[in-house]
Image 1 (spheres, rainbow, N blue to C red):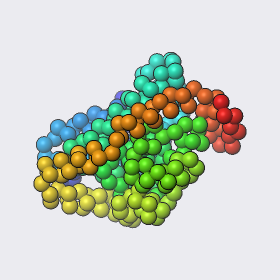
Image 2: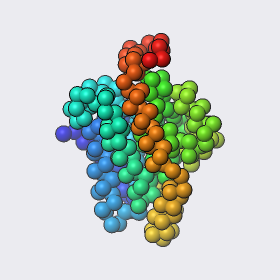
Image 3: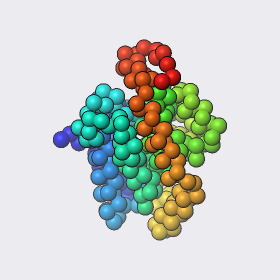
Image 4: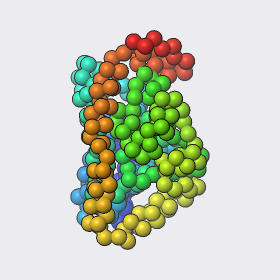
Length: 263
């Protein structure tokens, strides 16, 4: 099986790389499973003090792999669209593991961080972005919503009005806008991004590990993320079965403008 995720360490930093550069790190279920396994290894490695998540090549992630949609049936059954809540729960489970890790997590964004790729970054504690990175949640342009925590975590991070602007338009924003909105913590040249990330991790490692872990847990629990995830799953379970969704996917793959019917 290909290595859809690579791992290595620098000092006390556990680095996880999405490894489908030829697909702009488009995410399918095998990559999600590999990411979950890598997070388990990071947690079990005693010397590690933080996790950095990045993408191999020039792009963090272009989002979910639409071409791999038919392969979802291999894991979740032929009727997966009728039981979308189970599929959503599986994807949410991996991102919840990322968010709930005892280790601080830092996403390094470059090129594009779209859809599920941005949802991955939102599940991290911090986001550092290279200049000229483009970010967005274009799911509404497919007839869907961000259902792997994107809606909930984006609203918690930048507030309801900005979250609605990004999700309801499906547009991309630049690094400069993202920093202004509070979506990213720091901006750096692409060539310096990993060094900046490791330096950021060193700042955290200078603090007591238990204090860092407890503080992270307290802050995370101040928002009702669990309720938001349930609402996302219920909405997506309906939307995935609509004609608009099928038309939206076909239009995007064909690079055509969709014509919505509201059903």
